[in-house]
Amino acid sequence: MWELEDGDELIDTCRVPDGARLRLVRNGDDFVILLDRNELMSTDVCASEVQLAEMTCARLAGRADLQMLIGGYGLGFTLRAALEVLDETAHVTVAEIVPEIVKWARGPMAGLTAGCLDDRRVQLVHDDVAMLIDAARDAYDTILLDVDNGPEGLTRALNGWLYSPDGLAAAARALRTGGILAVWSAFEDPAFVELLEQACFTVDVASVDAGEEPREGRKPLHHVIFFATKA
Image (cartoon, rainbow, N blue to C red; front, side):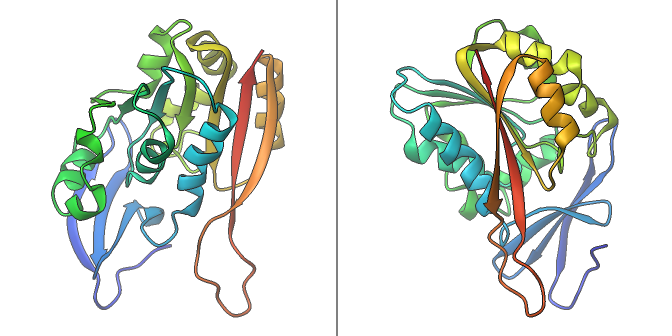
C-alpha cells in the first residue's frame, strides 16, 4: 500500500466512472497516480509503457497509414513513444474515459505531456476504449491496452469485458489482418494466454524491464506485454 511521505503533494482526486478513486501526487518533478492506495502508474517506473509502443511498432514496421488505438492515456509514455517512431501517415486514437487524466496532462503535468495530445496524428476520444473496440470492424492495425494492472477489471469492474472471450472476439473483429492486440500487465497470466489463443490469436509474451531503480536485496522489477496477432 502506498502512503504519502515527506515532500509528497496531493494535487487532485477524482473517480473512475463506475470505479475506484484516483489521486495525482507530485514529489518534485515526479508524479504518481494512485488507485485508492495502490500505485497505478508513475514517472519513475515507466520503461515498460514505452516498450509497449516501441515493441508493437517494431512488429508492424513498414505499414503505411498505420491506424493505432491506445486504451488509456495514463501519463502518456506509450503515446509519446509511439509518436517518436511512427511516420507522418500514421493515425493514433487515444481513448481516455477519465476527464481528469487529460486535465492533469494539460495542467500540472504539461511539461511531461510535451504537446503530444496536440500532435496532428492524434485524436483524443473521451470515452471507453471498449466502446471503440466493439464498434470497429477491420479498422486498426494495432490496439494497445494499458487501462488496468493486467488482464482484469481493476480500475473498474466493467473493464473485465476487455479480457473476456467476448471482448477478445471484438478486438479480433476490430483489427485488420496481421494486426496486433498488445496488453500491458504487471504480472504473468497463463489463463489469459489461453483465452487469446482460443480467440484465434497467435500469442507472444514478452517480459520487459519496468525501469525501476535497483534496490538492495530486491530483484529487478519486470512487467509483461502480451502480443496477440490476428491471422
